[in-house]
Image 1 (cartoon, rainbow, N blue to C red):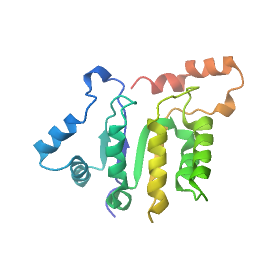
Image 2 (tube, helix red, strand yellow):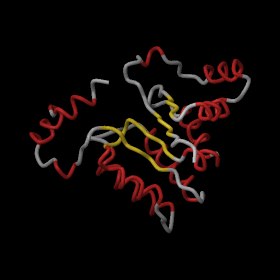
Image 3 (cartoon, one colour):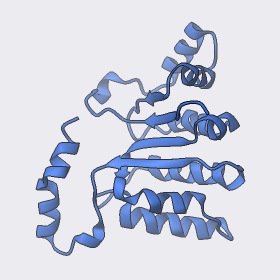
Length: 187
């Protein structure tokens, strides 16, 4: 079997959002320069590299997630790669998120209830994340997995966190000062 292929979806906060375009014109330009659609260009990169990193623009810009979902929905992705890694989501929740995304639910409403329960409990250490990008991303992977014989696995890479460990305001403040959290923000 070929080397384990990894798909890394990562947002680099070091790049200022103002330097990024809010349109998809950059994708069109790249496609014209490369002579192929962006999705095909990404799959060509996987032929040469085990790891391909996609940067993220402003979280509110969901057009970029349409491209990512298009890449993930292509049967080649599950067959040849099978893994997506994101900067968002605490690594100690990998089993939980994959149970969610590979689970079987009687209705879409049942899945959405499970998604929101997971999201509130464990997706992020911020008390509130009002942007839709992550819900769209997780729901998209579930929809792909629901109909695909080979399931995509999601790897979460942010620092360890559990709301179950937070009982007081002081507990939450201590988390923000913890060495693990500080280290994860240095990159």
